Structures are given as structure tokens and as C-alpha cells.
Amino acid sequence: MTWYKAKPAPIENELIFILSWLLCLMFAPQLQAQPLFPHCSEPILSRLQSHQIAAGETLTSIAAKYNLLPETLIKLNPVLEEGALVVGTEILIPPINGVRVEVPAGATWKDLQAAYSVGADVLFEMNGCEDVPREVFIPGVTWRENNQGINKFPGYPLPAIATVGLAYGWQSVDDKQRVMFHSGIDLLSAIGTQVLAVDQGVVAFIGQEENYGYLVVVDHGKGVQTRYAHLSKIVVAIGAEVNAGDVIAAVGNTGQPDLKVPHLHFEVRQQLPVGWVAQDPLYFISY
Image: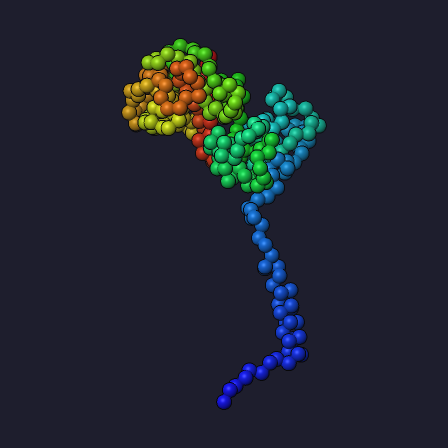
């Protein structure tokens, strides 16, 4: 005997359709497409708020009110560089510490990561998950005035003051065919010239790095280190204690220098929550 499955009656088909439709309505919110970048928010530079300077306020008190560093406010508001606060002046306040940076055409998030030691993913999200805009906010990076003598080292990295062949910051290289961020200064000097520690500290690293070539890193404590690169030889060991003026290496041309002529690549880095961030060495040495 052959058994046949009974076909649903027309009314049953309608009920099944209605029930399916109701279920879709109930669960539709859970089925909506998730955002492509769920951690993204409005760019930091679009979330700046305004503060009107009141009588009796100081740069320090305003910074403390918003849990920021004074350097953050100075860099974002050039009017504050003069030092005196004018009552009634409107200044911009960011939600976190950092700096606003103008980005050269063609620079990528990875370029900014290499320049400022902040993850490309962090920069991407904090700046709205967009292609690199003309200006970006770099979290954690601070700025220092070059007249703050208390931050200067007692020594100089070479036996005599040298010409700066390539300065710190965004630079055009290769006959202006390429723009890059230079994390230190290149001091022109003959190969074999003695390289000196600029302050007391402990040698934290010696060795060869792809771009730096032969490299010495000195930790000076309090979140400050100096780097000496493209060396021809190194005469100190890891863990050695050095003082300002001690010979630690000799000028060379190892690694991948940005200048064709012999020079010492010298960096100053400050430890911030985002990592060891390069600072302009000319703020820290006498020249």
C-alpha cells in the first residue's frame, strides 16, 4: 500500500506565511547588518569643545579642569604660546591629550604609526575610520617649548657643534620625490668621529637594526632615552653606566641613512602611554 502525505489546506498556508512574517518583524533588529567598524566614533577633531577664559584662570588650572596637560592646550591653541591669558578668549579643548598634525599628501596610517609610535588601528579609529585626512589627531603625543632649559641635556652627541643636515619632522627627500617623517636630526660629521653620551644613563640597547644600522640606545630615566644611529662601531656594552661626554661609539654610514653624506642620526624619545614617542632633539641640546 502506498501512503501519501496530505497537502496543507490553503488556510494552513496563510497561517504559516503570517507566522513567518511576524517572526521576521520580531527578530529584525537582531538581523540588521553590523557596522563595518564597530569601534569607530566621531573624529576627535570633530569633538573639540570651546572654553572661554575667565578672570583668575591659568593655563594650568584650565588644563586640570579638563584632565589635560598644558602642552596639549598650547599646541591646539597657538594664542596660548605667548604665555599671558586674555580674559574672554575662546580656546579649543580636546577630549584627551594629544596633538593636531598636518598630514602631507600621500601619507598613510602606517606612515603615521612609524612616525609617532601609535598603532595605525588606534589612529584610524580615533580619526573616524576614514582615509587619512589633511589633519589628524595623534593621541598621547605632547609638545614642548624650545626655551624650556630645564629639559636640556648637559652634553652634546659629538665633540663639536655640527651642522644639521636633516631636521626633525616631515621632510622632503629624494629630490622632493618623497615625503617622510624624520624622527631625529642628522648631524653632519666625518666617519670615525667620536659619538658621545649627552647625559648620564644606562645603555639599554646595542646592535644592528635594519634602518638604523649600528645603534646605541641610552636610557636616562624618568621616561627619556636617546638613540645614536648609523654608527661604524660601538664601544659600550648593554648595562654600562655612562655620563655626559663619555665616548659610546663612532660615526658611520650603516643601515639605511636618509642622507648620502656621513652623519650621526640622533633621537630623543619620551615614554608616553602610547609608547616611546620621538621628540625634536633641538629642544633638548645646546647648539
